[in-house]
Length: 414
Image 1 (tube, rainbow, N blue to C red):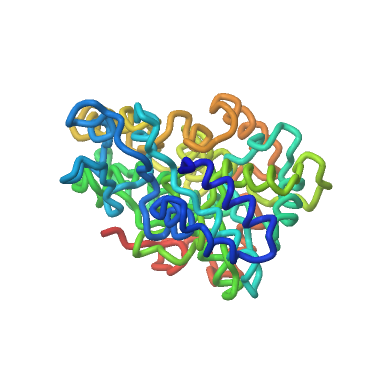
Image 2: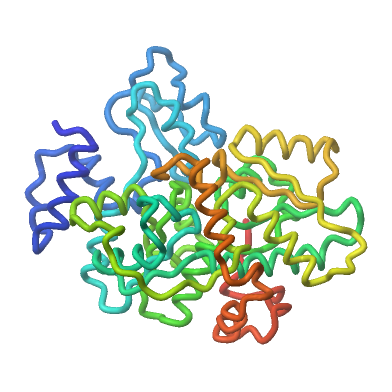
């Protein structure tokens, strides 16, 4: 019997190399559960259990480390992962001694959709992409490599991080009126938001009702191009779970990781570094630095100073990265041991550049993101005319109108 990885590579290669998918009907001899996980990832949690549990005791390590209590032994001793509780933080995968917990993969149905879709297909690329596919791969070269795969265009999600920076800064300026008021950022990290929603639910009133930049980009594309297929590409497994949440489902059709894109490029023998350059991108430095710890805080802080330079109560930020550090920061907040009024949490050490499916060390990823931010023409979204133009195209006459209820940038948390 083939391992999960062997099965994945066989299906991926044949999906890319053969003219049709009829071979899938001839794979009855393979593990049906594993094959179903590859062909129908929407039916499964972002973390998969394949093979038998290798732990010797009745309390497997993955059960102990899951902060969301999403894993438990079944009646027959098998490992069960609750799709409603699993957010894809990947801690269990890192801690599984038997290496039988695997990251879910959406690449097969995503490729099938790219082939068959009649409308435009857009790649929505996370701000952490700089340097992931080698230091020679510029945004323009990556755009052309993705077109070789079958995408019609690439959109940098950093442009929508710009818009969410504006919204977060406006929310802070509106809601933080006393020294004891505070705001928990709602941007970027689904692990951070899930932690607050599921473990510290009493703090939910302090999260402004905003979607993540991923969801904002998907929704905006579908407003401008209703027949578009949207595929997010990033370092994060938790984004696969976020894309399926009931109140925001449909904005992004598939989520692929940097690793999945790298696999496709290898099979198709596409070298992004050898591609020609294409047009420049339009995000500001603020949107680009979202990819590392502290980036959201810095972006909101400098934008807030532009929106209201004479605020009597200044923003006092605090950040944490990694689940244990995020929990410690929230506990300090609850116990009155911190005086910050803007809290940023990232589920991975280093932020998005430290995600479970990055291709380079997070320290190098941070340097790449900082360099890319420094190369931006505009420092903040307030300075960025492309942000204003996009907002107008989406029906926002002023930046202040971002605070009004909007089907694009607003969500209703449960």
